[in-house]
Amino acid sequence: MDNLFAIAINGIFVKNFLLVQFLGLCSFLGVSKETKSAAGMSAAVLFVMIMASTAAFIIFSYILQPLGLTFLSTISFIIIIAALVQLVEFIIRKYSPPLYRSLGIFLPLITTNCAILGVVVLNVRLEYGFVQSVFYGFTAGLGYTMVMLLMSAIRERINILHVPGSIQGLPHAFFITTLLSLAFVNFFGVIPT
Amino acid sequence: MAEMTIKGEYLRGIIKDNPTFGLVLGLCPTLAVTTSVENAIGMAGATLFVLMGSNIMVSALRKHIPPITRLPMFIIIICTFVTVIDMVMEAYTPPLYKALGIFIPLIVVNCIIIGRAEAYANRNTVKFSIVDALGIGTGFLLVLVIIGAIRELLGTGMIVLFGLHVISIPINPATFMILPGGAFMTIGVLMAMVNYGRIRKLREV
Image (cartoon, rainbow over all chains, first blue to last red; front, side, top):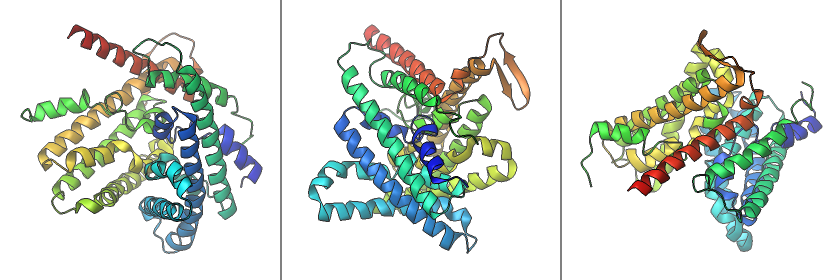
């Protein structure tokens, strides 16, 4: 079993969800054009990741496993995530309208964000306990947030440049991501396995 | 609107609505599993199976699904097929299952599948939905195999397909291409090339 420190380094740097594990790329490329929306999306992802790992752990180990229903795990995880996102949306809308206005549009997108389902499935595959699962959700969200903010800051500055027509937009974003990802690859081997 | 033909719909899925370069959907598996051609074929096969199943079910049930609850219905249909392929691959192709890892259950949230259910199968007959699934699936397979071939060839100097050496070139293998960065660069270059071709075509017109 990994200790919490190893999980944190793993979640944020070594196995960064966006740059190393390729999870959540759709939202990454779509929302990282400006820092404000990138921050909103990251906050929503971080929040739902923690909630989803908590709820999924409880359902998986207290309902699915004792009853031998583990083959239903994918379907129950996606329903848990969809229900959670709805719930979070209702609560935020009721109690904090300003937060809803800034996060609201990102919440529906999160249900189909592979990073969330990814963290839940990874928790099960790695056989993490309760505290570890929740902590992994938290650190994976932190890693996502960090890369999202880095990328949006870079893209905001690089927008001023003149690039050839065929590289504009997505290809350019991919080249930036290549360099960022190369930097993160250097973290391989930081944690001896 | 032009008359739909089976051939036309099939080719549309490969070229115009190509999942990666046309619609820009489902990037996560495209990049993550293309470290080798073998993984690419496995992933595309699994996706094609799920896409086919969900397109058939959704188009067959399209008159019975109430519009307001259609998205949860689609997700449950897709989940069913993903669970089936997940268990089949775990039982019959354990090495491939291990190599693809969490990306098999993640087919559920692959935007290609729910996108096709929403945009196509929900509005068209079963026959055309099957053709659409085949077309999009072939397009996805082509892109995955091209990216996988480039990365495997440059990264290891050879392509090994199901235990057979298909091709090998005398270069110093660039490990970079197998690393995550190589995936981003390959798709960036390919996308720039596709864009270049499109811009030239527009200019000619």
